[in-house]
Image (cartoon, rainbow, N blue to C red; front, side, top):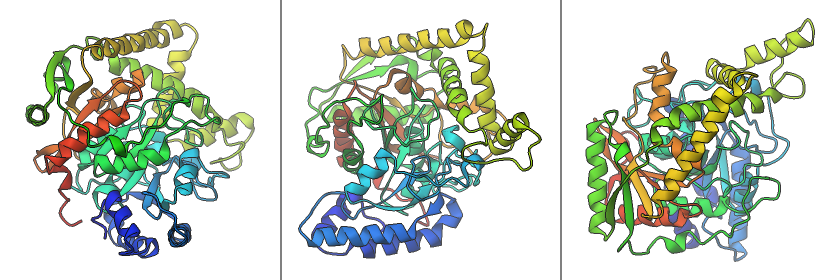
Length: 483
């Protein structure tokens, strides 16, 4: 049963080939057996999962139906889940049990999804390797000496290893798409505001966005359908109708205009990934797409702009973790200042502390105009480049990452080298655009992804292109050895 996709599970449950309770028990047993190799889960929620599975079976017996009714998933451990530890991969929140459900958690539970647990992640979603977690690094099931990508590496590794069919994730600068590329999955970052951030512990509020990780575009469509929608609790949520994503999967690609930015094929791109990207372009051409060279001239400035804006927002968001109201508190503080200093110094890891310091510096008097304001101006230029490009093309295609997954620890001592791995994904977050990564081949036995970007609220177009591509390729069907 563990090899079934979400779509196949929905059909099996509808045809009464198995029950949600049977499926849940089988996957919980599989997680207990295999996850010690990967460290993809922080918490398992067996009791909750079995109760939700029984409830889903009862709802089906009463005539209800739905693609997510009885389907097992997991949540990245920054979505608040009532009564369950929500740690954000940090010592700071190791003892925190959320008093409420995030909107995403509540919506998926209402749709009948079964929560198997909370997945490992880079601490406060800061990282591209899933090595900064307080609970230890996650390993890539394709090669356990390599990283699975971050910050949603736990969700990616669990789905890639067939521990469950799909999981929620978040993307601040590529944290859905990059792990998807590294683990042979399909991952979608929706338009900013499409999925509620209420109850999603913040890293950088103007960049964070929740989305699905799964093996196929079809499954991403199913999971996004349950996650998306306006939320009055979230002031950045957009009141825009949510289309039927599954209904648009089978549209023809005849005449679809695909833009290929020349800036994507610079000296920093592994030539083997460039070749696989061009192969994907040729496959889409055979399906009727029209390829057009385009330019995104301000892409070169995206990484420095992002690594000013994101840490600036993080320094503000993480000021709430002070040892007073919730989370980690140091022992026997001498006074209030000592409580603040030691609680934060002991509760936050090195990468989080680094980004808080960078952000506080960029926002400080005398440097705000020199760094933060300029970064925001570059952000506008990046968005303008995309708006100009989308006047000429329907989607933009390129590699998801410049290199395949690197070895665990290879970039730990050089944060800038790790930051540079986000060069293709960061621009979508700066502009708020939807982006999708889909499997496109292998380099040295490690998966590689290609990225699709579309205009605002055109997630259906991305899913359509990815689904048609997957109907004509088999990369997404490959399974890591041993899983």
